[in-house]
Amino acid sequence: MNLLDYDENGKLVIAPEALVLEPFSKVWKSNKDKSKSVKELTYIFLMASKSNEFNFWQLANEQERSDEVIKFVFGEKSKYKPTALVLDALKFYKEKINPYSAGLLQSAITGAEKAKEYIEATDWDLKDKSGKFVYDVNKVRDLFLKLPEFDDAIQKLRQKVKQEEQEGDGKKRGSHKIGMYEGGEDDV
Image 1: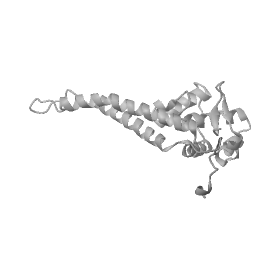
Image 2: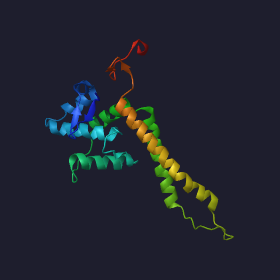
Image 3: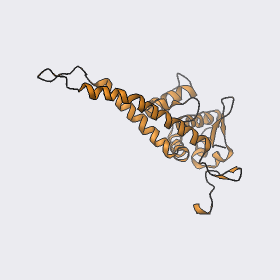
Image 4: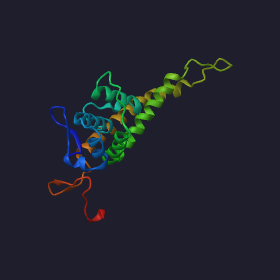
C-alpha cells in the first residue's frame, strides 16, 4: 500500500502509517477541519505522484503545476497557498516515492520546455550583413527532426516512472511487499 493513493472512486486513501510520519502528522494535526487536511494531503499527492491519472506533470514549471493542482483540489477561485508544513511534507514525500528515473523525467521535461522556448524565441529569418541566413537550414532541419525522438524518450520515461511508482521500490519478501522503512540485514 502506498502512503497516499486514490481509490476507484477518485478519493484520496491515506494509509494509517502515513499519519505516523512526522511531516504528514503535522499537516493532519494543523487543521481542526480534517477535510482541509485531506485536501492538503491530496495536494501533496498530486504534486508528487507522476502516476496518478490527473498527471499534472505535463506542466514543467512547478508554480504552474501548483496553481493547477490548487484549482483542482480547492476550487477554481481558491486563494489557497501551501503552508510551510505542507511544503515540508511535499518535499519529504517526493524524496520517499520518486525513483531516480523521476529526476531524469523532470530534467527531460525542463529541457524540452527550454528547447521550446528557444525555438519560439529564435528569429529564423535573421540574416547577417551579407544577406545570408544566420541559422544553418540543415542544422534547423536536424533539430526539428530530433524533436519527435525527444518526445518519445520523455513518454518512455513517463511510463517507466509510472511503473516504478506502482511497483514501489520493487523489493518483495515472499508474497509480501516490503514497506518503505522495512529492510533486510543488508540495509543495516
